[in-house]
Image (cartoon, rainbow, N blue to C red; front, side, top):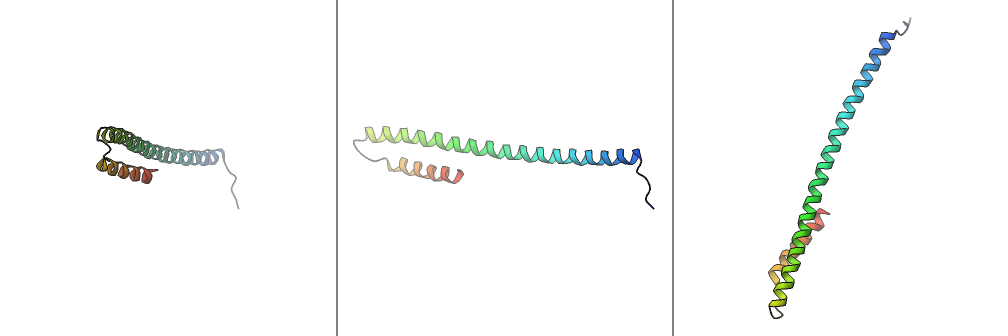
Length: 90
């Protein structure tokens, strides 16, 4: 025979559900913060690589403009490596 559900039983069940929702909310918030942290780190890395590539492009223009037509191979190699790194990041 089933016993009738009391008000206290309902409140207890509701409290349990609220507790589960709070736990889920905390987990989802932690996951969101972790994801945001990873995105911030990636954006910082991309911006740093892009800035370094821009600096190298400037250095290449100066070196090749002042070098009487000589190619700045070392700078080109550094830039190519940074472009490959940026490609990997993106």
